Figure 1 (cartoon, one colour):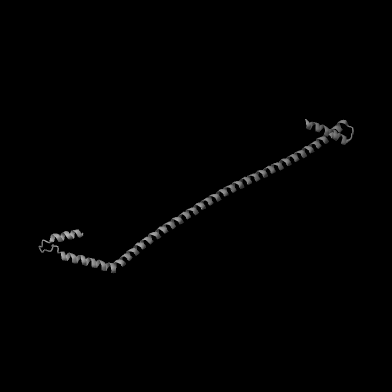
Figure 2 (tube, rainbow, N blue to C red):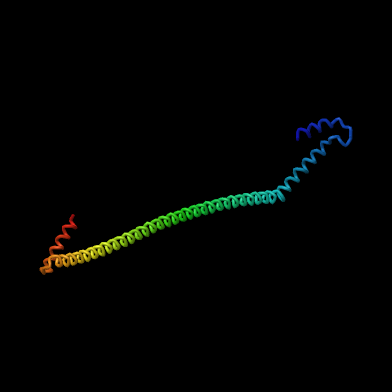
Length: 179
């Protein structure tokens, strides 16, 4: 820039006096005024302008840092929430599985108890049937023995001992039962 000014000064020494002519004295005063203005601005306004720019830069940087920290905090909270949700899902699955196992065990226990009860009823009924069968058979045997003794008495027409006759008939019926 200074080189252009000097070239303009050298070119203007031909002296025509128009508005576009370069006057070396004017150039020096313009440069000197500009430098004085720069010094005054530096003393009076430059420091506040730089301070304001620095403050603005720090404010923007602080805002960016706070935004970054808020983003990190939000990410951390999101991760914690996801971990809590995952843990809750695992707990619910565990509870459901435990409930299924408990229900299966309860079902098996109830089935076993009902089968045991059914078996007991069958055994009791079988024992009762067997007892009644034996009682009926015993009663039938006694009636047959009595009928046989009565028939034998009538046939023989002699009066033998009734106890001995019953013993003979019972012996005979026992032999029949074995066969």
